[in-house]
Image (cartoon, rainbow, N blue to C red; front, top):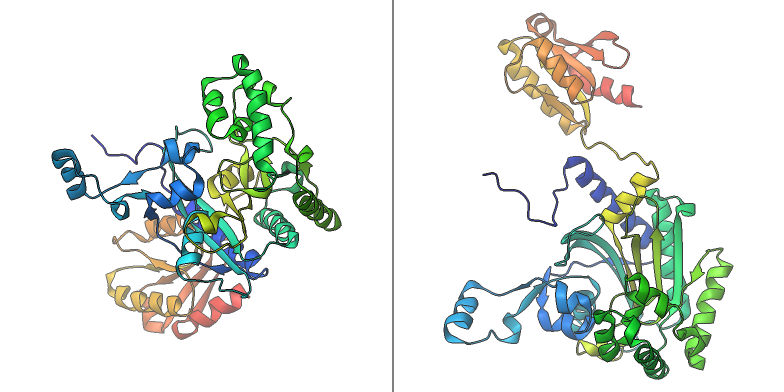
Length: 438
């Protein structure tokens, strides 16, 4: 029986792997112009980091994390009842923010009075979800985090940067919806949360069991419920924007004014709470409805001014976002965007017989050293079969080398698009390729 990839995971075959590399490079270019620098954190962190950072009541922590312990720790737990120590309880990262904030705190990247730390990352995340279109158990994300700045200009800058990235990779602006909301802060959100809880208690008979549980732990998460009846009930719930404190109202207004000034179109959505507990004030999400199924969010984020303290650091305001590579691919496919092919070949060197193979091999290396993607046959195919292989590889040109050509110190260079041929000196093949490409 063949062994396949685990459920909820998928292989990035050469064409998509090439696009993933280009996707990351585009992110580095766009985000780099805003001062963001790369950071690479472990794919495993102590489980406690996510419990404290993301929130124990979130679906991510309570249901979706992959937690790992060593075989020896597992044996001792099962056979001797000795639970692993906290530092030995590890989880595959379900998102990137907590790990980056942990790294900022651990390495003191934002000392008192320092400029903000602007960081970007790219890599796999893991969630034990029910696999469906646009939702996998291993998926790839690109994200940014800015630690140490609390001005609304950082919020607006990040949103503008995100939209420019999407346009740069080819997602049409008109196919996207940018949703915006404020989650308030520790001054105004507790009172608002109690109002939502009271409202949910008054409508308990109309809500699902999950929402009733959320009412006790974090009632704002009920705004995320996909049950149509719950969504209808929560549509009439109190709105956070009607209960913001003066500072949060001013901050939110400034973010909107900056986006308006930059010509960024957005929709205010008071139901937008995102899925993680650490958000404060500004939250945003980008959605694409065409070709996405029920998972139509391609990215989003917000401000998290208390997260650094939650993971043991000093008070440090923060803001970030993450975008899903696989969902962006779905959005691009829906928009009719053609992806680049990984297979590319500038020159194929064909051997008439074995007597020229050594010189052909040397020519291949010379062309590769000059920067050309060059291939040759390694299976002693006939000349006709070598041409078929060159065509399959998408070779732009084929250099035919036989005994007569070798004696004359030349090759027959064929343009595979025009089918024209010319004799070229062996020592001039690299120069001729350069001229042809120019």
